[in-house]
Image (cartoon, rainbow, N blue to C red; front, top):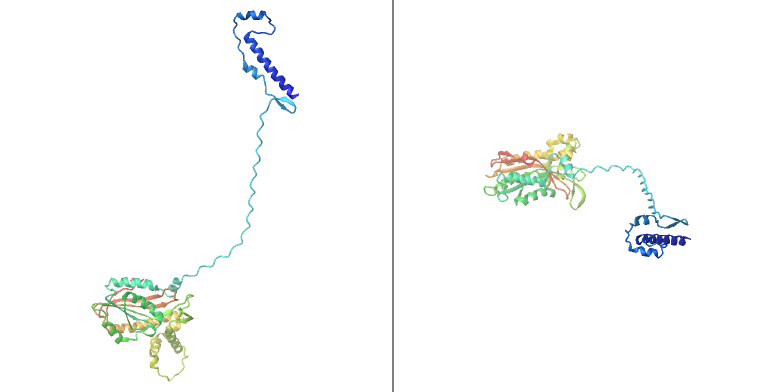
Length: 351
């Protein structure tokens, strides 16, 4: 049925085209022979409106068994956009404990325990600069030290020897100048002609990495040892006297330990000071320095430092663990003429 109707539509289209052509040519199926004779008469062709013809013809489509105009299929409805699932709310994190405050640096700890302390590295740089301005050079300068016999006291001494090349040693236990007047006189004779002398003296004290004063870690030794041992022994001796606990003895001081006996006697005037100190080990090296300073001044006054003059640096050495820099608390840095008169105070140049 669907095919028959489509064929009939095509037939109707062909018949319509034939009738239009007949109208143009003047032929009519019913006109007969008489119509042929009339071809001599020229007729104006009629205008065929093909637009009207074809507009009356609709394309054939079958929808639901019936002929209907083909409809343009509607575009499919867009799929609804699926929303991404909302992220699950994070569970509140447990409050972490506050990190412990970082420990104070070792440098800050040393400088808090010994105000005014500077590292040996800083000391060397500042002292050499100050002395260079006074004409001191490695060639014309003799280094002279009065430091403790302890091997830790050699650290600063060796660092200065590396600069000036040689050293005359005046010191003994706790850094006291036990070479005395004779030793200083001999040293003065060894100063280069028209040269200079750089004298460094002072007691020393240890400080451990955890800040314990009066003890120090030593290389190759597990024992955290006393520093300075001579000074601490002298302090104990003085404490036994000021505290009233010293035993009565008739023993005479032996010559084999006369330096230690001298240290004990030289610190004895500071017994009350040490007794009242908040930290005896912290105060001890400064009491020792004051006794040393008296001796050094007397020795220098009786000697001869030659024409180039004498630079005298006095203070307290602070010895530390092998992997730390040592420190020095400068208490005096005088530039003197050949007669021992102070010409300039160089201490501010070390600050």
